[in-house]
Length: 250
Image 1 (cartoon, rainbow, N blue to C red):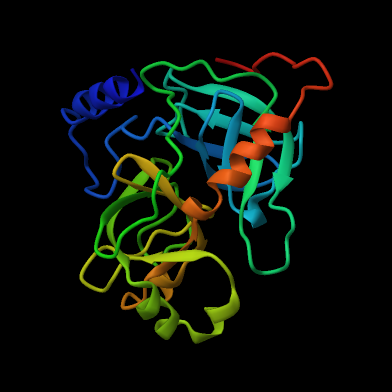
Image 2 (image 1 turned 135 degrees about the vertical axis):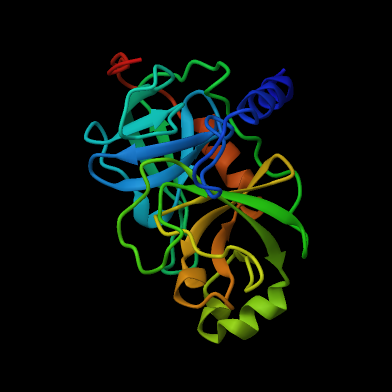
């Protein structure tokens, strides 16, 4: 059912004329979440109660809003669900800087529809040369600091792990990461915790934005396939201790 809804969403969005070729087709990434309030970051919806984001994007509970079903952050499109964050759980054990992952629990469940859908967790790791999609509200111009008001999308290839480490020798002991992007592709998208999806599965959350500093360098993402077991364990053992407040707005 989820795959059918996603297919419908991509098909519907394809008819929308875009002024900016790097702007995502509106609502073609129904799993993409905008965190705002105590932080300003992207995240990915993986369950009606849960989203994931990078370590440094840990939000403050009840002071951070997760906006789902959003494309243009400057207007209310009628598709949004704005839900307060109730809990943030950083990867444990965390031995800086080896892991970059935060699980975020919503204070109320998301309502799945055409515009809000979870992205499946990885069933495998990304393959070298595989073409993936990266989305976020940043700028694709390294000289422009202002974020985009509309969701941007890039298409990037996965880079070989050895080539990634040879490019960034200091990252050798930095933990589980995957690199994507190269000089012949659009390789710059600013913003925190941009979401990388490969073959319909969540494969990365942006860690280091190297592609904007040097277009010949790939960008580094958290390698999500290595965290599936931990994510599921957190979801399985979590219990609600207090009643959930309602959505802010829908």
